[in-house]
Amino acid sequence: MKVLITGICGFVGSSLVESLLERHENLSICGIDNLMRPGSEMNRARLHKLGATFIHGDIRAASDFEGLPTAEWVIDAAANPSVLAGVQGGFSSRQLFENNLSGLVNVLEYCRARQAGLVLLSSSRVYSIHALRSIPLKENDKAFRLDDSKPLPSGATCLGIGPEFSTDAPISLYGSTKLASEIVALEYGCAFDFPVWINRCGVLAGPGQFGTPDQGIFSYWINAHLRRCALRYIGFDGTGKQVRDVFHPHDLAGLLDEQMRANRPNGRRLYTVGGGVGNAMSLAELTAWCDARFGIHVPAADLGPRTYDIPWMVMDSRDAESDFGWRVEISLEKLLAQIADHAQANPDWLERSGL
Image (cartoon, rainbow, N blue to C red; front, side, top):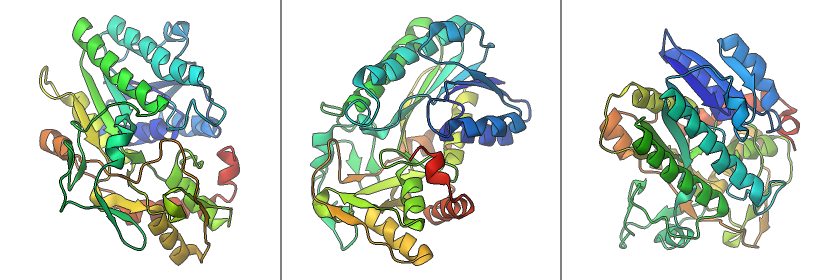
């Protein structure tokens, strides 16, 4: 099988290469990346050693697709992953839409012309911010927890957020590009008869991720804590009780592998996938974990709210388990330990990440 991965030099793209090659004896992978993300250049040598073919190009340029080899499947991992993209940080709103939507159209045209299937990596941030903030929560000294003794909104259960949860605006500019991408991808698949799978992913993390305060938060937090950099709990009374679930791209690869192998023309095409309640923790709990490993380092409290922040997000992956037998295998403790080991072995990692 031949697979094309967009954004192949990113953390997720390069991790998927490694894991998919471990699962397949006769798998050929090539990928395209514009190397825009700080640190991404470092993964070129790693990809070469793995036997993957790297092509320097930009998915926003249709001409960059003309010379790409024909693949049976495309995994689109090239989108900007920050919920603040287009609002703050050096990435304009126009650049956000060019990268996440215009670029996707070029990917879809490639799939149409080559009759390749598409696996689109979408985001948990396609969901309504108002609906997410209305989920009943209780809190302990370090985290918000779901209060399932009270009525939950449609699409939310004690296991997390499912595909049916509200996507009403506002969902952020970033979230709107991902939601629009899902719709356009499904329509292309129907119109031109090629398979499309969509996975709304929770937080992805692991050793080697380029972490910043806006994306790759688990990697950033552990690296910054180890080096005693300034850390802040933003919003929610400055307590750090906001919760996310997390999982490794190697686990995600298991699901993508099953989807690309599946010969199912009809049925569910969209899935929510993440670490689930077993792999969920708050920033305050992450700080406590870092304190135990590296020594105490206290984040500052920043009481000012930040655009698009939400208190709790955990993904319900039951559909993926039911349809593909998929579940997370790398535990939260193992994942954090792997990031910490990598942080200690690479003292300049934050600088390599562009900080």
